[in-house]
Length: 442
Ligand code: BJ8
Image (cartoon, rainbow, N blue to C red; front, side, top):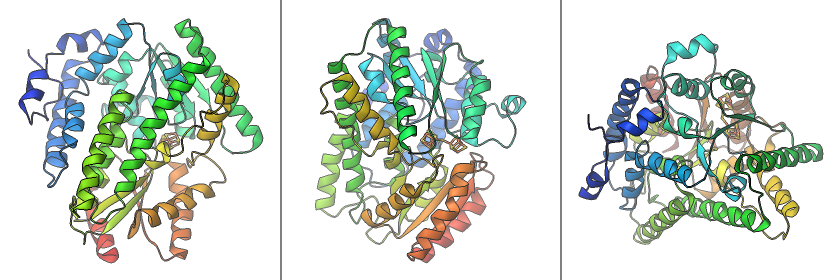
């Protein structure tokens, strides 16, 4: 049986030629072929109808289409080749797990958050029904044996952030052979900073024990440089979206931010910069994904893990354009560079700790920084309104959405609070609410 990776991207001959039969690799990884094929088939159809059907896509998106077409194929093959050459693959679920440290240890980081329902019946045998979709989804990907990233990981890092993740990892840790727990603070006091630095030091020790090699100052500087370059490229992309018309759709920009968690970081950075070169020209020529009259929306809230494209699809199908994501798969996760000026390991670990402690996830209290950041982004990207996206049963973001709404409304910024999950059942109702909101901000 000749199975290609994803079925959705075969725009050019080169892509078709590269596609290969990965059946043996998937068997070796222990994937369930029927489940996996069903997942790829559904994703392929969704990708075609959501991404490939868009008008005015920049040419530079063809690379990201290709990465998606080979996300379960060539990319996994690359990771296995890296493993054969001695690298370890480290999977994680949170932007608090420092990629700089993983790279410095000679390892490769991959994101494991999942954005689609799978094996729901099985999942609800081990997790309460009222668990957020993001958690249920990665459990479903594990139980349904459909995630090659999870299966290829030499170590899976779970973090103590929200109660849902923290407690579900107590169950998940027994479902995988290689789990590592990272504790994280929930305040930003000096004590919390000290704790975070200690956690990161323990993580360094764990990676050193795993690889049998010490992390040097030079390697950590190099890791920081690689990740800073990736963040700078994503920042450049974000800033270009401030133009009117926006040169790229919110869907495509989200896709790039999602791919940032899967692709080789150096190659990804080059491709994002190449795309930005093209977008700069489009901005000069006042060409965009939509017209200059398109209402401009900022999204804020829970991360949208791949392949969660539900809300952006609804928003952009109204004719509006998304100009920014205040999200961990977006600006919250990628902003702020790590200072690389220290010339010793301890100094660099301080810089890493300081950089990560700036992340304003809703698990922190108080969290005024996040509200300030949403206001800044609204200004910076010339958004006409903010849509707050909360996953059902996500207490941190849904609770915080009330304060977000209150503060934004004080400044006459229009806000729509949405609460949903990964199912398609509420699409009609969500579309009606989003259409009404877009009419208001027009
Ligand atoms: S730093 S946002 S990546 S924890 S949606 S699982 S919060 S109940 S994902 Fe996150 Fe790190 Fe924070 Fe970012 Fe819990 Fe909410 Fe589910 Fe969530």
